[in-house]
Image (spheres, rainbow, N blue to C red):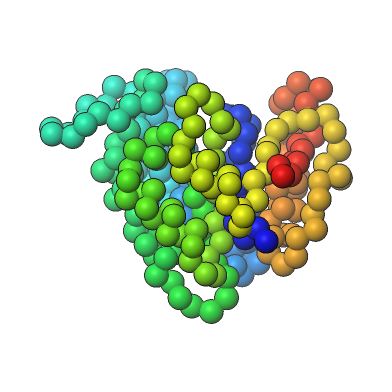
Length: 219
């Protein structure tokens, strides 16, 4: 039975916004939630990179355009963005270690947004994600990219796990009423939160043919 939930979809479709909204719903329901999400950084209307933001409010650079790596460190680049591995690991690894060491009663959710090319330059991060996936009582709500080009080993590993459910997110003219919400407990609250009024507010900005938001299960 699936325990972890991962969202996937094209860049810009709103996976991070969904993750943020879902974490708010889970917190308000009394579910312990920790983790991080990524947020684009703009300057003068131009995107210059991405930040990592933990749910406790700590922020630091994930990548920047034109960033120079530290002396003796290899350059980790995705397109025009150079990844700041030191900053990323200093922010994210303690969050994942905390999720892995928490042995209190009941279930808890760990937000991991995202597991993509930039993040996967970090071997300690890869190890920490695998560890978190296997911790009893810890449920991951995360995002992964759609397959494109060379497969990302950890992403494919996650897709093929029996305890992972992958949700594909896209704008669609079809009704959201047909999305299966058969899960119980916090999962039902989570999935319902992904279909709430936030998307009704956002939909008019998109072309009319893509109005309501739709989620479909990927087998």
